[in-house]
Figure 1 (cartoon, rainbow, N blue to C red):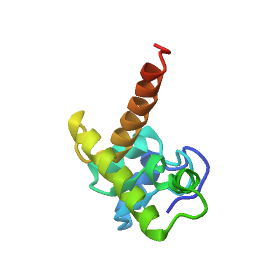
Figure 2: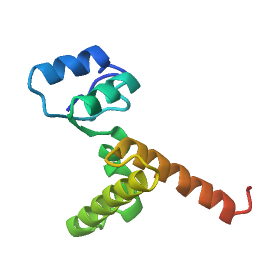
Figure 3: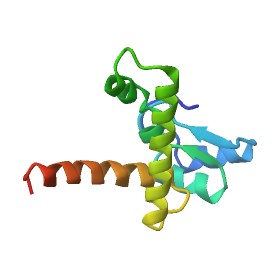
Figure 4: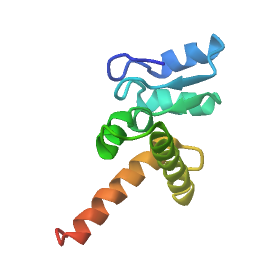
Length: 119
C-alpha cells in the first residue's frame, strides 16, 4: 500500500517489488505509480489498485452524507468498481482499472457538460 509521493514507484521499483514476491500494489497516495511502473506491474502480473479508485472513499462519503450506512457505502464502492471494470472492457482495456476509472470519469464530466449545454 504505497502512501508515498507522486511517481515513487517507477519501472525499477515495480520490478524490484515483483522480484521480492509482492503480489499487488494498492495506491494509498495520489499517482504513486508512474506510467512505466504500471506497465511493469501489468506485465509481471501484479494486481494494481489505482488511486482513482482506492481514494474515492471521501467522495463517496461526501455524496452520501454523514448519515450514510455501511451498506450504502459498500454498495457505492461496488458500483464504482463495477463501472470502472465494465468501462475498461468496453474500451478494449480489459482488467485495466486505471483506464476504466479515468475513462468513466471523463465520460461523466462530458455528459454533464452536454446536458448543461456547455458543448
